[in-house]
Amino acid sequence: MTATRVLVLNSGSSSVKYQLLDMRDSSRLAVGLVERIGEETSRLKHTPLTGGDEREREEPIADHEAALKAVSAELTADGLGLDSPELAAIGHRVVHGGLKFTAPTVITDEVLAEIQRLVPVAPLHNPANITGIRTAQALRPDLPQVAVFDTAFHTTMPESAARYAIDVATADQHRVRRYGFHGTSHAYVSRETAKLLGKEPQDVNVIVLHLGNGASASAVRGGRCVETSMGLTPLEGLVMGTRSGDVDPAVVFHLARVGGMSIDEVDTLLNKKSGLVGLCGDNDMREIRRRIDGGDEAAALAFDIYIHRLKKYIGAYYAVLGRVDAIAFTAGVGENAAPVREAAVAGLEELGLAVDGELNAVRSDEARLISPEYARVAVAVVPTDEELEIARQTYALVAPVGTPS
Image (cartoon, rainbow, N blue to C red; front, top):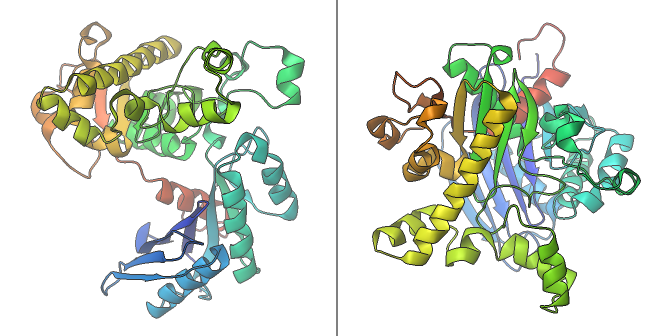
């Protein structure tokens, strides 16, 4: 029997998201979430997709080991247990791979040590990813564990895009450069956009706009990322739900010297109290649009700032690519907020961009074009699927030679 199933794990500091997929047809067998790990009452939500009802329970789950054992029990109840000989590998989302990891990688002690060494540049994410890996290794030490890195897709950026203009020796000593994030999503969406156009990825230039609570843009030339908006951390770039995106670096010095704020306070301000929530008190685009419709000026200004930054990046990446075949909107806001898509390309007709109002208003889970036929540049909505991308990359690495992936 050829093992064709891949379990995808996304381990956060107090949560584990999981999906079990069969790579013969990329079908999902089960999905679920464990949250509030380590709190007095944790919650596990499990949905079998091969028959049976969704199950949800609340109980204390002390740590990630207990969480994965609970996940294993739920899968076993559906005949999909972690001990199944049909399980080929476990794929782990790892946020930061630095410059060393440019592709999915089978996890060894050396690989895990390097992920650990990268904790200073990803202090909120890599420790949780490591915990998930170690826990899964303990449960299935015989099974290949594969790390798929958020940063990997962006390692093709040229040095002219990846370097900050600061002292080279200082930058190298402290690994200060632009790494980019959401790479798994950008890789998936750029390829799916090419497919939507009936072309191969190497023949298409795409601007991908991943717009969720976290947001990033990328310029993808011929299937390779040449520029992205996030930098050393996910703070740089677009206006986000709670993150400021681009600010003058001297704002930090000003707030410290004049405002008397500590580094930790400024960090909290820029990462958790800025962006849309800092501008108008809401980071839910649906609520912001509702407020705008009611005449709320603060919400309207927040929306305008969000769109202004988005347009700046579209224009900049158009210049970087020279020729653009498509712009693809993805993630929660990108896939669902028609007013954002319309506003982002409004006034860019001279660049070949336009949105068809009727097509843009349609809600669908399918990849689709929303630009009129006459538009020189296609505008697309492409639902992202990071779990499927992780599963594909994982299975391609571990499947026997000659096995379709």
